[in-house]
Image: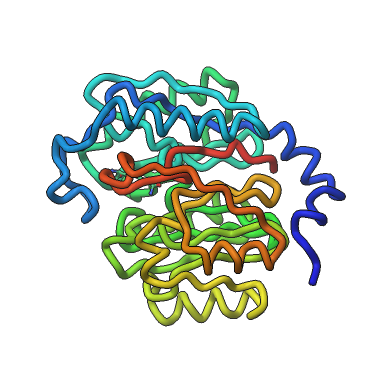
Length: 287
Ligand SMILES: NC(=O)NCCC[C@H](N)C(=O)O
C-alpha cells in the first residue's frame, strides 16, 4: 500500500507543509462558563487553568517542531477563544471569518477579523444570516481537492453551498446528527494520501453515503464510540504525524498500518469545553 508519509516526503505539498503556519490562542482566560455543547454540561468552573496551560504549552511545543505557530491575542471574558479552529476558514490568503451560531461566542468574531486583516488576509464576504463556524465545520481535503463542510448543529444547512460559491472549490456538505459531535472536526478528519478517519454514527445516512462514494474502503478509517469519545477524530495531521488527545492501541495500530505516526498529547482540560487538538489549532492552509 502507498504510505502517505513517504508520499508526503516526496511531494511539493510536503515542502509547503514544512513551513506551514498554525494559528493558536493562549488559554489565558480559558474556563467553562456556559454550556453550548453536551461536553460542557456539569463542567462549569471545573477546568483547572494551570493544567490547561501546561497541556496547551505541550501541544504548542509539539506542533512547533514541524510548523510555525502564530498567536492571536486572547481577550478576557471569551473563554472559548482558545479554540482557533473556529476563528474562520482559510484558503491561500483568503479567509471566511466565522459567523458563530452560539451567541456566547459572537464577540470573538471582530477580534478574529481584526487579526486576519492585520495579517494581510483577504476577508471573503459572508452573509450575516448564515451561521458558519470556520474550520470547526469546514475541512480541506488536499488529496481529494475538495472541502468537507459539516452542518446541522452549528453551521447552517446553507453553509456548504455558500462556501462553495465563495471559494470556487468543490464542497461536500455532511449533516451532523449527534449533539456530542456538534462540529465536523469532532467526528471527521481527512488525512494525507486520501485517508479519512471518521465516526459514522455522527452522520445521517446520505452523508455516510457521500463519504463512502468519495473515499475507497481501504482509505476509510472508521472510529468506534470509545475512540470518538476520546476525540480521536479531533486530530492534527502534520505530514503523516497525527497529533491527538488520545487513541486506543487498536486505533494507533490501524494508523501505523496506514503509514501514519500517532502522537498523543493529553488535552483533558479542553475536553471539558468540548474540544481538543484540532479545535485548538487553525492551519493557515496553502491554496
Ligand atoms: N470543535 C471545535 O472546532 N471547537 C471546539 C469549540 C468548543 C466550544 N466550547 C464550543 O462549543 O464552541
